[in-house]
Image (cartoon, rainbow, N blue to C red; front, side, top):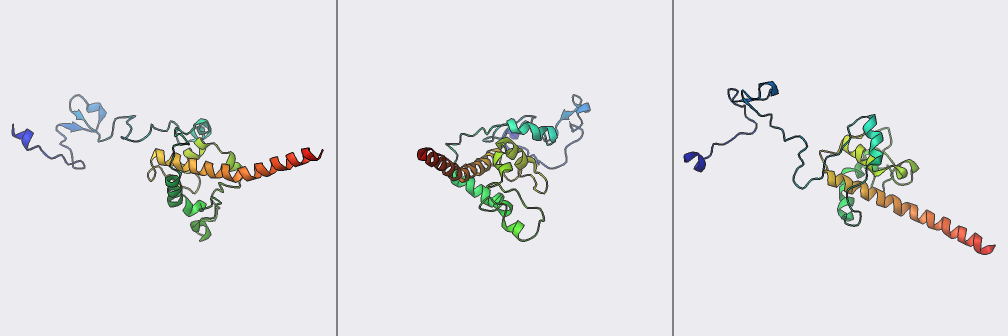
Length: 185
């Protein structure tokens, strides 16, 4: 059995033998159908399930109902911060204030999202942020090719953790002021 010992090399991107193979599904049966794509719905080993919404207005609106599949207590926040700084900080800034080096250089006229301090983004659902990172929005392109699904969720968790920490001192001040006014009465 020489074929078992000396297997024929398959060149992935070489031309197919059109007498045996076809990429036309109408010819399937007469020839072997092979389009070099993974099976629909396949998930890469170690990756998370596919995001269910399309890049349209309905998908964007529906994304608000999506919750992160990651357990926030087990996320490596140091790695999430690193991913944010490498991929997002260039525009959104290391302080999440929209004053990143690329914006400061004048390369873009529109200011990037201010994740900390802007009520719009602090109230934004994590699913909507994930949708924007997956497909891109306005001047921001998609990060689906740079960050895996898990990494995008980690970055969203990092942003949300910074929003909570920023809001906590303001809430504590309000609570302390209310307690002081109650004590004076």
